[in-house]
Image 1 (cartoon, rainbow, N blue to C red):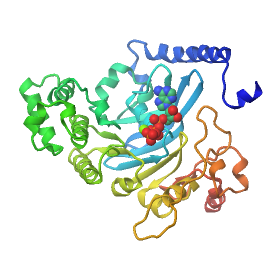
Image 2 (image 1 turned 90 degrees about the horizontal axis):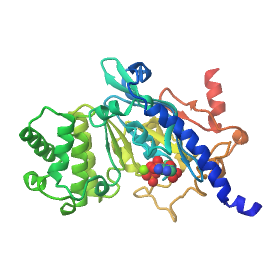
Image 3 (image 1 turned 90 degrees about the vertical axis):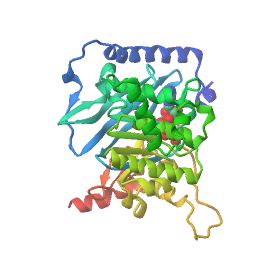
Image 4 (image 1 turned 180 degrees about the vertical axis):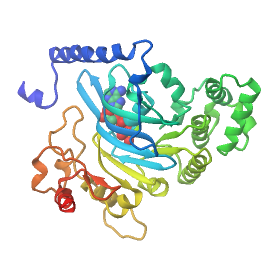
Length: 384
Ligand SMILES: Nc1ncnc2c1ncn2[C@@H]1O[C@H](COP(=O)(O)OP(=O)(O)OP(=O)(O)O)[C@@H](O)[C@H]1O
Ligand SMILES: [Mg+2]
């Protein structure tokens, strides 16, 4: 019996108990969420720095599953400055998509809930909303107009049974209710041309399956950008594409960002893409931010052993190696996180303090922060 427990086996009784408890917790959250006429004061807030478009502050997003609570995002803090691109990197399953879904309030409810923290969204004119508490009817005006998301997989974000034109029209019409049908169509054609679709009138009448992967990705980008959002969240926008199309899509995103003066939160596995696009980089590991800084700092002077490992595992042209470096071990089980540094069991640079509690963020420079015991002493010296 004891052995089964070690392997993560749950008895039916145990599982029932967990789901009962989960229901209790999620019902509480849902009750709060379903209230009508929530006063605006509950979700208005002020930005710490008005130069930021979004500030994520100590965000915790959990999934209450029958196997236990998955702490997908467990105290994430970073900000996106206006007009800049912030790259978010990290291993598969570290919580990148859940962080971005939290910003859009699209986490799968009721089991997925933002249990703590703030997401402050700058609406301009000194106004800001805390997305975590914003009611759904207000969110509908925010998604698309202020924040829009380009999803990981274009085929699943387009509806296969509707023509491209109808799908883009719908987005534009929904956000601009007083536009006439002809104006909406004209705007759709303009957007299709903007994203580099040559035969825009023809594509307007096509179904998603009649397009290539790169074209579909462009359509999704056109839909995302149709309402000139202040923040574009691009979740692996180029992972499914070949490198030439990837370069085109990235150029396109950058051009559009400058044209509509917005900011980009770019999620990717690809460090090359980050190097090319990002002004700032946030490195995530197992639901937490382990290091953040300007792109230059992260690439030239990585401090966290995970970031160092990540940099060493990318191939460099002209450098001969027998075997490309890979970080040993695997990410801890998100249901049962250790109470010490999550990276310790895979770390090749451990120091004496690593047995202690999860390390706090320490400052390396004004823009560069790292959460690692190896830098505690340096930070203390600097403060003195
Ligand atoms: N609906 C859900 N129910 C339960 N757990 C979930 C759900 N969605 C995500 N998770 C868990 O949250 C964790 C983070 O997932 P997320 O999708 O954010 O990873 P990611 O960093 O985007 O990975 P990738 O790079 O592969 O896209 C994972 O452990 C995943 O199992
Ligand atoms: Mg993802």
